Amino acid sequence: MGYILYNQLRGYGSSKRPDDNAQALADCQAYATRQGDAAIARLMQSKVSAKTMELSKDLYSKWSVYVSGMTIYAPKDSFAQDQYETSSRALLAEDKFAK
Image 1 (cartoon, rainbow, N blue to C red):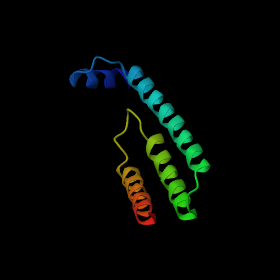
Image 2: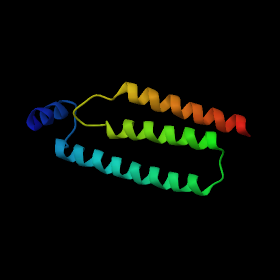
Image 3: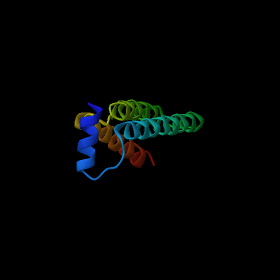
Image 4: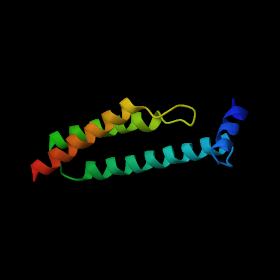
C-alpha cells in the first residue's frame, strides 16, 4: 500500500514518502489540538453568555471530528467540514448580535 501511494505521489510531483506525509499530518493535528485547548482555556477565563459558551462547545466538538478524520489515505470528509462551517457561522452570528 505504501509503495503504491508513493508512486501516486511521485506521479503528482511529490518527492516525500507516505510516512513523511503521515508524520506531517500527525504534527498538524497535535498542533491544532494544542491551539484548541488554549482557546478553550481563554474562553473559560472570559465572561461570555451561556448561549455563546454552548455554541463554542458545539464548534469545538465539530472541529475535533473534522480534524481527527483527516488522513492521507482518504478524501476530505465533506459532511464534517460542512458541520464545522455551519457551527462556526452560528457562533459568529451570535457574537455579532450579542454586541
